[in-house]
Structure formats: C-alpha cells, structure tokens
Image (tube, rainbow, N blue to C red; front, side, top):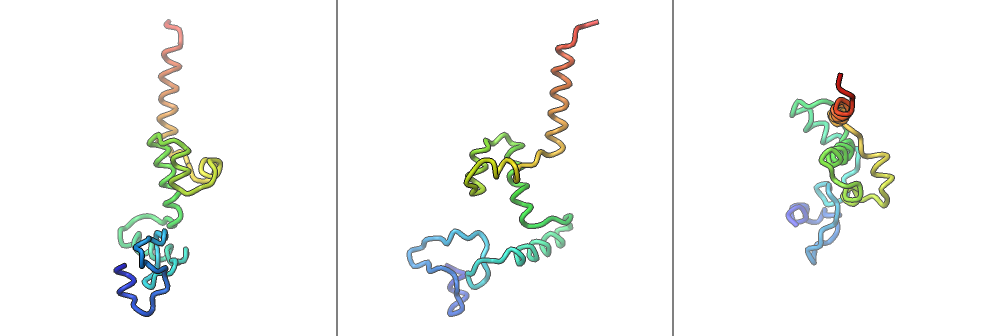
Amino acid sequence: MEARLAAGEQWKGPDYLDSTPSGFNLTGATGNVLQPRKADLYFAEVRARAGLDSHRFHGLRHDFASLLLAAGVADRVVMEMLGHSNIAMTANRYQHVPDELQRLAADRLDVMLRQAAPSR
C-alpha cells in the first residue's frame, strides 16, 4: 500500500482496495512485476557491495531447496514451498546435495562398515 501511494498516478500494479496482496515477491516502484533481468542486476549490485562471490538471483531458489534438504525437510514440503506441481521437478532440478552432506554420508558409511567388520 505504501508503494502504491508513493507511485500515485503511475501505479500499474494490482488494486489493493480490499488489502489483498498481489502474490508477487518482487515488484518495481510502480507495482508492476519485476522482470528477472532487473532482479539479477539489483542482486548483483547488492552482492558486490557485500563482497560476495558471483551468484545469480535465481540460484537462491536452488540454495533454498538444497538447504531444506540438508535440514531434513520432506520433499513434499519443499515442493509446496517452491510452488512446484510435482515432486520430480523439485527433486531433479532444485535439490543439490552439498559437499558437506556427501562427506557426512561417507563418514556414516565408514562408521557402519567399521562396526560390521570382524575384529582381528
């Protein structure tokens, strides 16, 4: 509502007469949908000021899904949070197993195999 009032006659976003949110996460100053390229440019600027490595804005969705996986969140929950219509999209394209989880899995396997090995 604040953005709409600030934009005045230039407002192009949805009407908020009933206080219903548009559902858009990112909008321009006039309420229109922020184009992906502009989001990337803005994010690159913020990232550079923070001294962070190169990373695309859309990559944050992948990071989000991967971190949820690492935290043990069920695939179905991650799917819903990302707004996907099926789990295959989430599992195949958005969840990447971080190196740390792979190391943890290898360490667990090592412990299991050592416990199962006959004593000498």
